[in-house]
Image 1 (cartoon, rainbow, N blue to C red):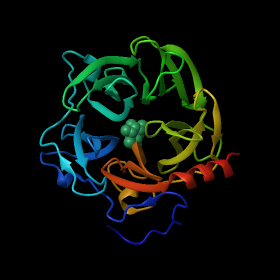
Image 2 (tube, helix red, strand yellow):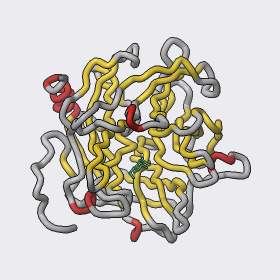
Image 3 (spheres, protein in one colour):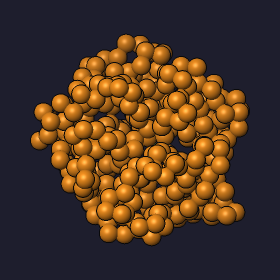
Length: 318
Ligand code: BMA
């Protein structure tokens, strides 16, 4: 698709040669865009819950699966998880941007997503054992809040959630927060985890979690998006952080440079230009496979060596 990029190649994450891998044209029913999918491994396959925007502008989630995580995607013939505004009024304008984790020792997955309510975006939670039936917990964080994921395990008996409240004044910046719950219903003990930077930084103005936190030998790997506003609009790029394995409040490292951003035509041109927005990642051996929404229109893949990513964070922890 398109001409050769004018940008330098990313040092760390390499784009898959057949990007974009999922496009609206591939869908078995009528849709506008397919993007911002959560990812996990289920039943030996890579499973994505893809955010689909329908022809009204409302989003739902659709499941797709692939044995190798790159090719032969099997797309559910109909929406997998649709908004249910009669029971859950906060889902009235759709559900978006899921992050999936397998809850250790519980035999179920948690899907944390953004509900688009009458008062703006908020964080909702559902759990599933088989990606067919879902138990909805409803609202987890009041509006405005989004970009959320659970950790796959409890810390000192409590579930931990990363999320991104949006302050009323963006002059203060929108930062990544961390909160706790004994039961997935009552949340509190909240604190800022990763603040947006200021001034000309690539992640000044807004930051938000990308994919679910990923456990590595050196800490929880956090890939987050940072937004820079320009005269032409916003640019969504990606950065890295590492959190302490036993105490995820503790930021061990944060990269100074962004490591991935919109370079290719399919990332620069679409419903929302200049957006690379991952919500899911899987690890196979040393290979990190990152699934990202491109320009709010299609799904694409970039891969990296976990070893090289950890080396990069150490070197660029300024
Ligand atoms: C963010 C989210 C994402 C979207 C991005 C770019 O605020 O709403 O769903 O991909 O903006 O439009």
